[in-house]
Length: 267
Image (cartoon, rainbow, N blue to C red):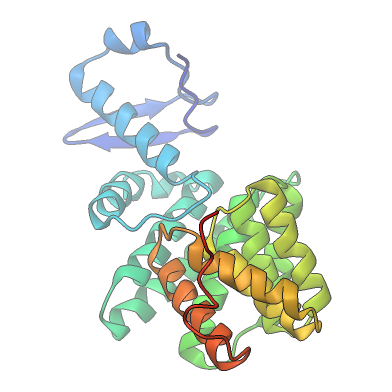
């Protein structure tokens, strides 16, 4: 197994020692790494684990995992590496989502915005999907506090994220949800259907927004089916549980269905 952590020159502090990262990045086999001092091995593996966790398409709801990633990334922030910067912004954003203190949430999100801007400033010409995905999320979250969201900015970043990583179902979902918010219902439905085509049934939230978009397009039966499927899809994240509850409310309040009617029966 070969490790390539990131392409930059810098230092990773590990206790009182430090690892000088080569210009070509860390590229070590397990055998080569085992020959290094224990503190060196720990430093490399910690950074490797943090980058791996923060490269996942979904979300992180473990405070412990976020704290570990934050600790590791803080040690290499001065490297000013684009891959480190946007992942650090992600950590701050997900910490904000888990915080129960409104003041702390806002502070974390503003800090995240600062680091995502730094990442955008040095983004390579080829583009990085993660930067734009999390830039869109950060702007959305800050908009909830300010009561005035930069909707066009969010839309631009999320669209770019879907173009740079066409296989990220969550990016397509976020883009579709933003289009729905902006009342671009046809485009929203297309984006949300695209997310389903990438990974069917991956999120009840995607089905929920698809149902809402179809409802606005006058496609009643399709909307009802999507909302029912939202209720039947297991939730992996907190926001998905909220979406399932909202789907039920729409079916009962807007479509006037009974509790029995909204249940998908086993064959």
